[in-house]
Length: 138
Image (cartoon, rainbow, N blue to C red; front, side, top):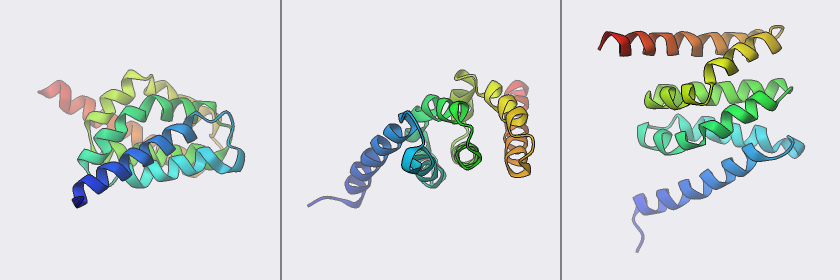
């Protein structure tokens, strides 16, 4: 007999492995990075616990987004980050430790002609600034 929680943990472990491999793929051949980021967007935004567990993938997420010239990968990656920050605020600190702020600046410069990417990058920056402000007030 396997409980629903045990089943979920096994599935999350498999998803984590799939996402990690996709993010580390050399290219976006067959949409591998895009698929991994889409999965992360949905799983990472589920709840605090799931998002916290997937937060260890943030260095891979940052590297995958930094390396892309593909608008759909960049957008999906930013949306995944956004979902993970809303579900689990401590992921912001992890993101900042991977030079995440530099990533956002790069996205704004590299994809300045894509209004969707610019909008999400700015939303993330504002969310992080609000987080930093609340942290400094404590």
